[in-house]
Length: 364
Image: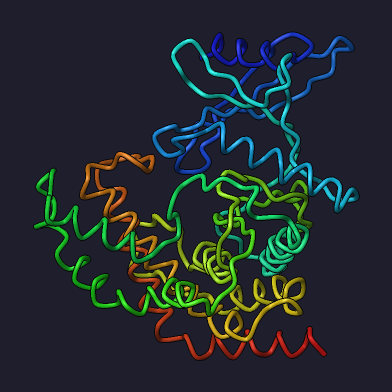
């Protein structure tokens, strides 16, 4: 792997002498490495090198074209803000294909901290601000310039349709073991599809959204609570505000990790929910439509069920999409999401009231 990483860095004209590397166990899709070079003055400088999962991103060049367009736009719109910088090859490309067809990119490393299950509401609030601000900076960006990097990524109805077809096919003979999970997920299908149904009727606006607002996609100052930059821009494309809000809650306000084997303990931490809502709505409240306001809390439930569908479908199909650490990993993820969705249903009214509170506070 050392030589492969060195070859990538050479293609991106990294100066100095290759010193060290480590694989970063982050994300469920791409392979990520921190690579460190010794500079001519003896100092060390690190970079992030990623090998893109082309089974997920079928057109990785389109992914990088999207990233180029939005990062350039963000630097022009908000020059005082940190934005990810992707390095270029000699022929001005932000990517390379290796001799085996692997797709690589390299971008700047921030000496920072990330959080999966933060205990400090201040961190969650600042993550909310960062994602809200990200959307506001891109508020006037022409969405027609963006490729749909994963077609129907958050089309909940189509996610259900695929899962139901795969249940019937049952290629790995696993369906008999997950009947309870299937029954629950199908029982909330229509409720979970409310947002995409409203979008189809023209009742919700499409915006340029991040579409993967897990809190570990925000870098924070080292050991601190100040948000530095939003990362993982592969899925930035037109989407629904409620899904960005909801996915962040699904990840940051769950009482356990999304793949915790103690999935029965999953549930919404309302202190963390309130903190994220406060930060996010401080940046976005004034642009939201009434229907968006009404569906923010519901978006948390919808995206959690959708994620349960995705994990369960991948499990049924032999776990070919998400990275797994053991054979039942996706099943454990499914059960954790289902338990979280059940708790969200119980707390939906309270979640809606908190949204209203901050809408009133920030639109006075």
